[in-house]
Image (cartoon, rainbow, N blue to C red; front, side, top):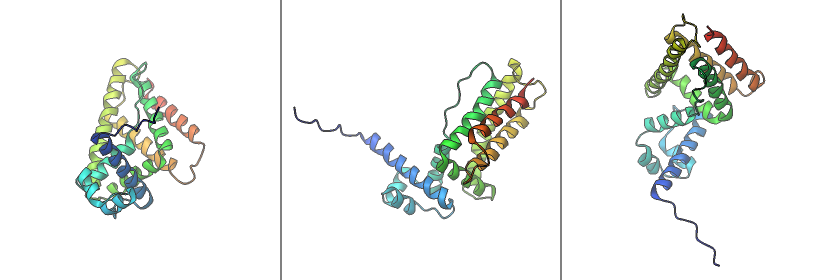
Length: 201
């Protein structure tokens, strides 16, 4: 029986593969050098494509940076679980595990965050939008926890969301340093426990 030819990929599959390769190349370049001097031509060359292909798929440098940022922050949220309070501490653990497992992507995300803090005109609004959305999710979950009794009644949802995001970003910066200051699993466990203590009724 003759060998069967492999099935041809659809146009959508080819497009998705190209976009994945471009995002991976951009992520590696940003992790190494930052995003400020990044050009579509550099990304295309690193991905094995022309600048035109990158431009065709993403339209602009801003859209490419947005895609890199979203990809770097993508992680599976834990199941709702027994309560909103448990979900919040599980989310802290999941976020930090994602950072430790995707170090080049995490480094790129945090590198761009630093550039956004320094008033980068492209990144500043992207990160403001991303952070507002994530803080909104955290604050809503704190409210839910107050209602279900798993979060202390005097917790301020917006302030707690800022605290949690600060905890995550601060620890993430240390996890991606060349020599993490302690055992990564121990750091993640301590962060989860600190979250439980901060929320406990």
